Image (cartoon, rainbow, N blue to C red; front, side, top):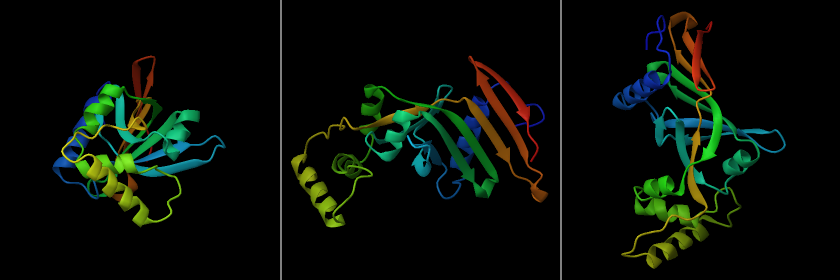
Length: 198
């Protein structure tokens, strides 16, 4: 990323940074991203999710569609995502609108998950009270036995969201906190950018 002469769109440098973070095995997980939502009462909430897809249309993550984050998105689809790679002194901030991806896309990704993760998605009513861990493990065991030798279907309450790229900031740390910062804004499909002070 050349901060003195940035490209017209942030998509290529974002892909480059994601690739570099994975190649460097940036800690703790190069694809871990803090997702922030706001609920119906205006109360913000953040949690870590994993980036599972990225292109010019946005950033994709998956979750239980009855979870707190999904309920927040239902009433307020505006979200913020933050990637932070301390080893590389880099951050990416994305603001956008989250929309459900197609059932076909969710089916395709669900099929790539390991079986325990598939069963776990079926067993968990994410964000709901849990009597005990033993109860969850028992449900996982029962579902695992039910689907021995069979394909596990994606539950209808589990799927993906794509967060649009409305505002994107690339942040490169430097000594003395003299950081490089570029912010891109997309309006009607047209990108503009400006450099920000550290």
